[in-house]
Length: 277
Length: 132
Image (cartoon, rainbow over all chains, first blue to last red; front, side, top):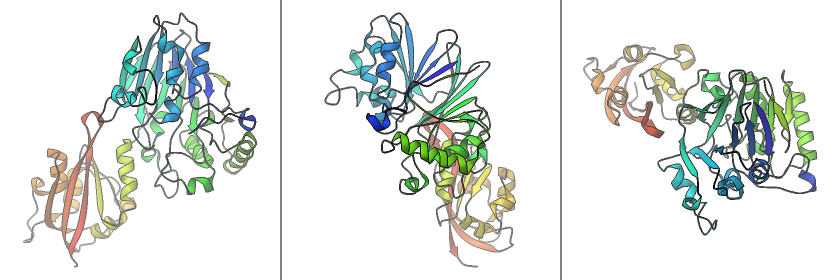
């Protein structure tokens, strides 16, 4: 399994000289299997470049959406395989009392977008959470996590390795002393023992105190969660649009010094790739 | 996957931990998985001490009775109704906690239904209607 980050920013695309190193595009991660299966996790603005990098004869792509906040779907209409007649795109995302098609059509329709969802040629939609399901070589579990609205995280496994993706996650919400026991911690089952965890790390502790309930984690929460889940490696993700590269370097350095994690911690950067297994 | 409560139960517990109304949460099997601090005062025991309790255990430990002291059958206990029949229920009754004090309470319970018709358990909120 190979995991590549195409967009690491949270909330709002934030291009500029001071965000160039970790990237300004919003959430998008490519997961590629040894059998050629390609999963695309989230359709933030990073998906545009990924779409252009995929081979034209790929045949099938599965796009898995954690939720439908704008920073996770804004790039969808610019994903070239969506309009390639020979490519079948499977779109997986959380439903509520409304199905994914109805929810997504609110964005993929005028006046927000010129093309209707129904005009996309070979699109298959799947409502989540759907328990465990198989795509190519990947066994995937989509589980609801703590984030406003209907939001899932993903646990993606092959026989050898496990990757967990929780880009928007506030497991500390309402918890006096975080974390509680594993069974009472949002996202634990998805992340437990993962070889690689990509996790929300948007805020400093003081920023979090002013944004409780907005659905995101402070650096220290991400580290405490990864420690509880006993992951092998943590990638910090969903960078705040107000944090420059230099800010992130400093804040993460301080958080690591305080938490002293027993596993490697990497700041998610556009273009970074992780080979698992 | 490793063991973890459903997110809806986790969020309900987090909400309950902030409420000043005594609140009980049971899972789909009727096991009492959490009660908050105000409920601890009614029951006379801390959740950390009692831990999770199966349905047949908590319903006898907390001994809900009518005004004459007769045990309430399960089909008159709101929390049991919410689990068994998956509908809201309300009742007034007497309860004797582990501290031995008998209290008159009103209880309203409702089932927790999640996406795709998943039944996750039920919540009961108690009001003490007469101080002992």
